[in-house]
Length: 249
Image 1 (tube, rainbow, N blue to C red):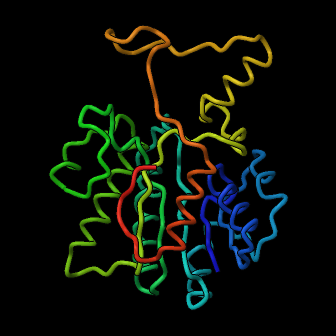
Image 2 (image 1 turned 135 degrees about the horizontal axis):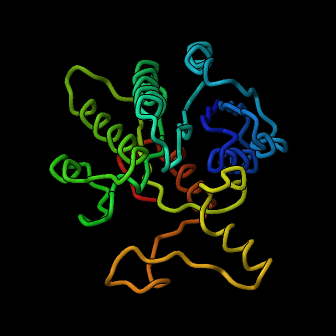
């Protein structure tokens, strides 16, 4: 079995679609569906089960001998989030508890980190596990900090004699991912669908203003990655269970 948290979300739903296309069965999706349209992202999928996050840990306990890997993609992903306790509980505490549960039952664990952990990029974008480097990074928002805090906690548990790790673990620092199934994110979706809509309606894309005096408006650059490439990385990790670490995607 393969368990995917954030299953109805942008990256999670694309991962499930590709797993299904490659012939994988026994896929368990975990997510809150709420009142938006994200359920549409799963309406074509053939899944073993879809569960509410409140049942995540009991479900893993029930199928602990059958679940081979957990893709933990569920989180509060809004860069505008301001409720520190809510973000800490969802992005840090739940992730760390899930990491320990996977370690206890020898279940492989791949999770979504973020390029937001690098802050403004002043120190480069090195997917390093060295604490001397990580300790100097300053994420620019609560979301980025929560991901950075979990990355560092996981590495500390990895080095500790008091803690076990899953047989495989990988943190993926996703940069600006774009592709199908992100429309439910509205203002938090990538600029690609925003630009596409503007071009379809008016023939013109309105670029963001530059926030730096040394870069003219419209000349700033960002790294974008297709969700299909991000999914390929996750499936490659599933097929290469000896590879662990923090990786830029």
